[in-house]
Length: 330
Ligand SMILES: [Zn+2]
Image (cartoon, rainbow, N blue to C red):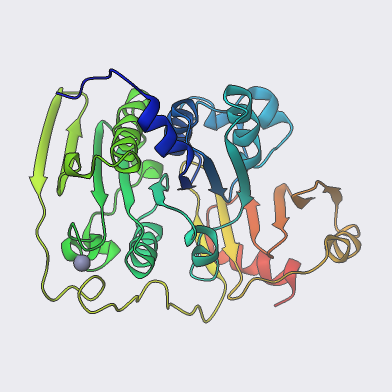
């Protein structure tokens, strides 16, 4: 049993640590709130999305005003967290974590927290974790079932010791079957607990297991993990997900929304004025410090500084490709 007697040593250790949270949605909000209240020194919030009314049921850092003002999640979360603890140095990154960006986003951090909603990004996190020797804490929540595990390079098996490809896990996402609201608090809190243990030097408390939780049936299982001697990542140091080169823009459906993200093969840093001048002939255009948006034939189109496009109001990837080609001109 861990006795909470004196926080002073732990507090000093936490103040000295920098943590990246990738994905500040349902799980990321819970994790961030814990870390800020615990008093971690620096926090980097990385999220590619904008707050919507439909997020408010499970994403505890956001309000109706954030959705009405169409704030990026990282920016809205930073504001809320800073009001909880102004001494934490918080950076908001309105970015997609992809092979071009993830090294720059996390390589100076002591720990990476998984708040993502997709398996491909988790394999990318696993690659960058092993390459830069940074632990990461996995969390997943689907329906009433959650999974939590910590991956510590050299000390525990990595994600690819367990699964070779993202497709080997399962095809269900929170988009297809939803998530029980209280589950994200349980999973996010378990992740935050492991973060606390790691950051305060209690590494022996972090077991190489995957904790499976079925909240509906009050059931918890711990499945042991073992090293795969043929693991391409932690044994052979092959970082297939980091080294992936996209031959065309990458289309991704966003979890729980009628929206698609299109990411160019390479970041495209075009001044916002270019898009404003090009798009003002097509419909109503609005500029914010973070993006430019266009209402076009019933769709809401948002372009970020790195050339990433959010297409709201459609779910057909082919239609998204056509719109991208028409609006971006590639
Ligand atoms: Zn491995």
